[in-house]
Amino acid sequence: MRVECERLVHRGLGLGHFQGQVVFLFGALPGEEVTARVTETHRRHLFATVTEVVRASPDRVTPRCPYFGECGGCQLQHASYPLQLRSKWEILIDALARRGISWSGPPDVVESREQWHYRWRGEFHICREEPGLGFTRRGSYSVVGVMNCPIHHPAINSVLGPLGAAAATGAVGAKTLHLTVGQAGSEVLLQSRPDQALGRRLVAEVGKQAPARLTDEATELEYRGRGFRVFADSFIQVNQGSVDRLYATVVEWLREHLPGARLVDAYGGSGWLSLRLAEEGARVTVIEQSPVSARLSQLHSEMHRPGALEVLCGEVEEILPTLGTPEIVVVDPPRSGLAPAVTGWLAMAGPKRLVYLSCEVSALGRDLEALCRIGPYRLERLRVVDMFPQTYHFETVVLLSRE
Ligand SMILES: C[S@@+](CC[C@H](N)C(=O)[O-])C[C@H]1O[C@@H](n2cnc3c(N)ncnc32)[C@H](O)[C@@H]1O
Image 1: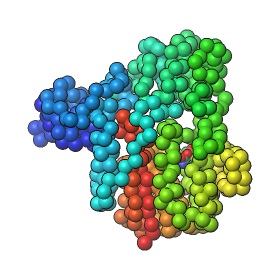
Image 2 (image 1 turned 180 degrees about the vertical axis):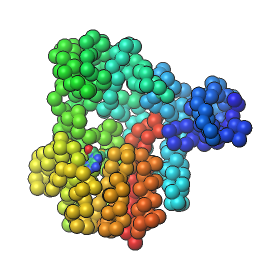
Image 3 (image 1 turned 30 degrees about the vertical axis):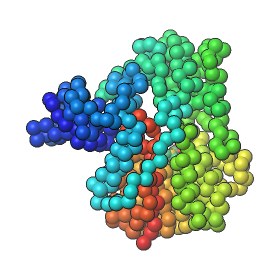
Image 4 (image 1 turned 90 degrees about the vertical axis):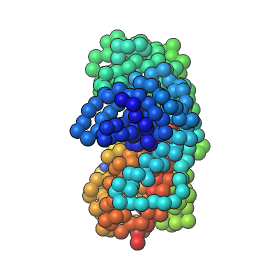
């Protein structure tokens, strides 16, 4: 088919129309005319992949990675970075409009400090293709071997070859290797999943000749001059260079209300943001489901600001309603967004100020519909913080106040 791409939509796909049907196009940019091959047919829409660009957008750039299009990791390497940022904002505004929430303010988009090599953590599938590690293919469950990934940190790329070669022999019970960079880039923490025995063997076998120090125990990252302990299964923001851009937004929007305020940091991870908010004078309670991350929150508080955090390990949906109404709540849920019990409690009895950090725009739209359109909150501020260049993912920060 020959089709014109009208705009970019969720998942980095171009939207077009062909013979009255909607077409979602992989590899097309707004304003481009392309020919495309249909890959999936549904009753009301089609999926297609661009085979030739007939009229190119001025925002088209050459993808840096040879696996682009084959690997399922990146969707936007063919788009200039300014276009990626513009599109992420438009996709956010559209997702909210679909939920009956209109926002007419100018775009507020914070770019990533680095556009490449920004990921300090990644999970690689063990595979037959060289170098023995890779990512799932776009639109498939099979794995493409990746020798070098330009969005991952150089320390991760430096160990892919030796780890892949060693993992290819006798990787019984392990399907993936989870890699995290630590110690300012000099160390790689690895964990094999689901069986962790391979990880231990790789540290022993590959450790001596690997370009970065390998460990399967724990590592450390620095944020604002302070050390934070990291385990493979404790949460970190993968784009370490831009962590402060994300957290600074929350601090900037809440700063004048923080001194002395009772604040709940729900989905608090290992306490990085919680401590930042405590430094500004808030009395912070952290709720975190993962026992490992909750323990780290407590440890980080003892190390850097003894007594600053009260840490409660458990589910937000269980704990938040038992705490009375604090002055401020910060929520930073996983991709699935807030559980109905959480949106319900917030709408009925929530605080005057609520900050929502979201990594999944469709869940955010659903939750804001409950909080703002049905519930009593008003949308005060909205910002995209791009923590995931070259991909369709991004973070949104929202400030809500209760009417
Ligand atoms: C997106 S991370 C945010 C972490 C933290 N705000 C940060 O920036 O480091 C989400 C966190 O919520 C935790 N989590 C997921 N579901 C939860 C739930 N139902 N109740 C409490 N914590 C949960 C996860 O373990 C993870 O640490």
